[in-house]
Length: 230
Image (cartoon, rainbow, N blue to C red; front, side):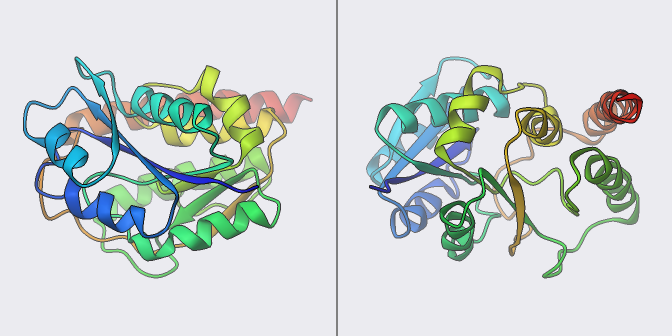
């Protein structure tokens, strides 16, 4: 029997977390919020909205938060878990589309924002395009938005990825696709709508984002080179 869950990593998202939880509850059976070291009212507001809240005493990063949430969802009997951000950027009306892809046979369904239009600066969009090209080449699936954190995990994906979920920023999205491919998971994409952040603060600044992007590019080039030698 299918049991669905939402996993919501959150860091200081008191301005949006209640709405995100309430929206998620209308689409899934269980909602887990992972409060990753917040210093505001995120924990209390998520609990009041009806989520099961897992608290990290200190900030461990998005990857660690998602891994904690997926593990809790799996322990609660979830067969499909949808990850969405606590900042309200992910349009909850697309949760069912992601779930349906898993029902139809995908192990991992990734929501891609660019097909339906999303405003983004030229430099950032260009970097993502390069990453997308390298990822697509490596995994054999065309994916335009490899940095997306709006995803659905089937039972096989949860079992395979929870123990090895990468923690560093961008590794939790981009590198995870490489790990999923190497675990022979079926990856599909789903066009989704994403909003511009209106509350809270991004978890990574401009300089950190550049540094992480360069690190990911090095990882990708290694993986692509490894694949070409096989």
